[in-house]
Length: 256
Image 1 (tube, rainbow, N blue to C red):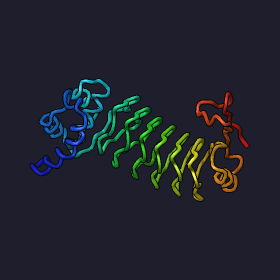
Image 2: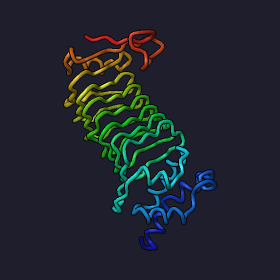
Image 3: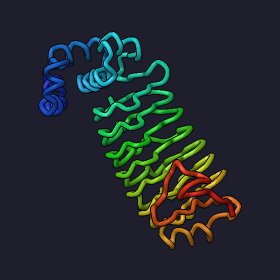
Image 4: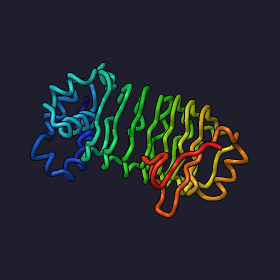
C-alpha cells in the first residue's frame, strides 16, 4: 500500500474514530489498524469494521478476527461458518467484501446500511434494524430474508431474488416492491401501511400474507392480480397489527 492509499484510508475511518471517543480510548490505534490491515491483505477501513464487531461481541480482537475469518489477500473477507451479531446495538457498519453463509443482525438498532459488496448466500436476518433504510443493489440470491420491523426501510433492490421466504412485516416506510421481485416461498406484507403498489410481474410460489390495515387500493389490486387461494389475510382492529399474534388477541390469520 503506497502513501497515497494510506492517506485516503486514514481519511475514511478517521471520521468514525473521531465520532467514537470510547472506541479510541479502548481499542483503536492508527498504527495497529494499518499494520493489521496490511497483514491480512484488506483495507484499514475493513479492519476497523472487524475490530468494531469484535468489540461489540467483547471478544479478544485480533485473535477472534483470525479465528472467525479467512483472508485471501485480495480484499475479500470470508466468514468461517455463520456470523451471529444478534443484539449488537452499537454496530453501525459491516466491512466491504464480506462473504458469509448465514448472517444474523437482528436488533442491531444502530445499523443504517449494508455494504454494497456484501455476499450472503444463506439466510439474512435483519429483524428490528430500525435505522436501516436500504439493502444495497447487490443483495440477491438469498435463501430467507427477514426484514420484520425495519420501520425505516424505504426500498428493496431491483434485482431481489429470495429462494424461500421474504418477511416484510411492519416495514411501515416501504412504498413499493421491485418490478421483478421473485420469492420462492412466502411473501409477508402485513403491516406495510405505506405500500402504494404491487408490481405486475410479482412472482411468489407459495402464500402472500396481507393485512386489513393496508391501503384499500393495495387490497383491491391484490385481489385482482393474485390468485385468491394464494392470499392469506391478517385482520387488524383499532389497536393495530401485532406480528406475533396469530389466532389470538387482536389479530388472526385466515385464508380465502
